[in-house]
Length: 248
Ligand code: COA
Image 1 (cartoon, rainbow, N blue to C red):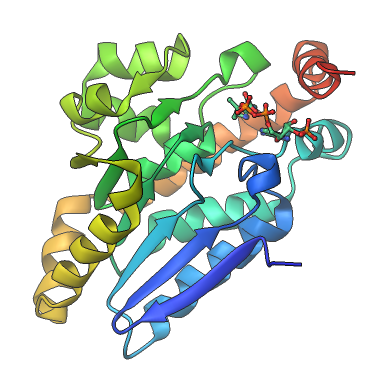
Image 2 (cartoon, rainbow, N blue to C red):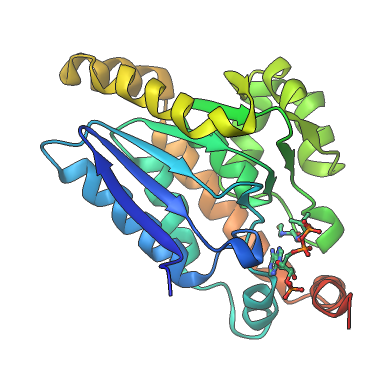
């Protein structure tokens, strides 16, 4: 069986690929942990200078596994989720995303931590948190309004209106839109370009541009507290059960 997250290094670029195509790359707790580990390890490496986060054809990431949400609604949110979100926010080395197909929930909100985003023309970004009785996470309530402007962020994060790749580019959260078959190569090329920059000055420039990390971490924690509480609501539990039962 293929691993649900694969990690490959191509020269100075680490590619962290979500690889659970049968579930559209819905993230399990083990996947969160493996991705966090791979990104942290890249920061420690003397050879890796940039990361690419990628998915499979047609599925960047369908968000948190809803079965885990249902399980978490009785026992609380597993620490592996916040460990991953913090790993994203705290990374010292740049993150490039290669987005093909669906990016839902954390599949979209993780993009706000990326330095460069390549998407296929058919990609869609959506965050149906409120429809599931939840609130946006991963620091997105702070980062999305900053990046896209408040009304566009409200439409995406609160109203749950999806964005096409072209709209996401227009909103300033995607750099380049290419054909599906070109997504990985275009993202790798951008990552190689970033990796070729002088590392110390890259780290300083990036650190300055990303602003106050402590605010982002605090927002992730505050969102997490609300999220944990909401996971246990009847409304959310009913929405999870409805999704999981939809074809049975
Ligand atoms: N959690 C658990 N399973 C999921 C999942 C998720 N987040 N997203 C997809 N899957 C599963 C489906 O249940 C299905 O499993 P099955 O084949 O055993 O029935 C499989 O992945 C394929 O999904 P399917 O819905 O058939 O694919 P699609 O192309 O028609 O739709 C999505 C893809 C992503 C639009 C749709 O699956 C979806 O809306 N998923 C839920 C996304 C979500 O709400 N995530 C949480 C955000 S907070």
